[in-house]
Length: 284
Picture 1: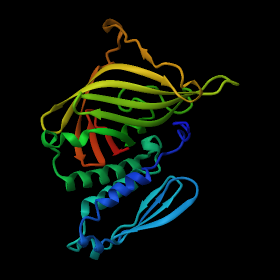
Picture 2: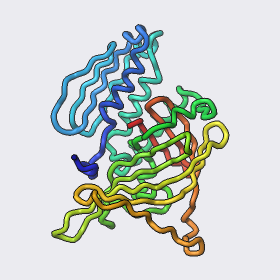
Picture 3: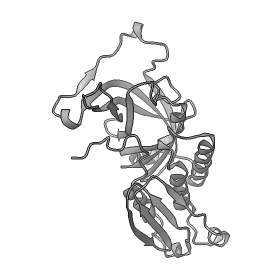
Picture 4: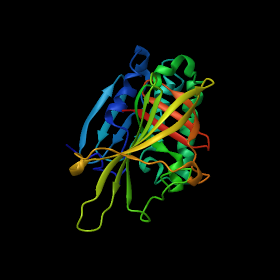
């Protein structure tokens, strides 16, 4: 079985499955035939065949870029132009190639912010009191503006990325169960070991409970951290990390946090953190 950290040092583009889900949202009406904005998707490696769907041309490559050709003014103003699916693809294009934000510069941050704002405005207010079921599932983080701070904690204190610590960040997921109110942050990590030992690959699960505040805000409360080895050591049982006593915790060590869901549908979610972090997720 392939290691979950095979490509941890590279950007993981939105999967072809996620893009196909987005494309399906553009084919519910015959009016979609007026769409003519070819999307070129690149992941890593060899080129795969072009996919065409109701005037939407999708070309998949195996590399790390997703590029979007803007629609012509005629297409953008036509009655059949479906703006939200287009803006979702535009957002994917804006956040590709920056290693989920770890490699983002100021220009990348501005482009991602602008694309997210367009989609938020087009989607309208989020109401979790009626759409809570859309949160259900396992979500893959494809972008976080907080990672541009070069720490794994984002805008909050956290270990630095790069060469200062022998830690490589893999994929990051959120697993949400609306019935049990479980909210788990799942992080794949590779820990370097002294030569000639191989690196240690682990999955850290930060378990929380969540509650909805108002119509679109979510509060999460930390419960525990569990670490499970993968790869050659996958037979080892998971280890629950002990919590520091309250008196020994640093003031920055908060047990809860809040964020607002600013866009939500069946396969895409945008959130804004309590410290201004922009995060983009796709269903996985």
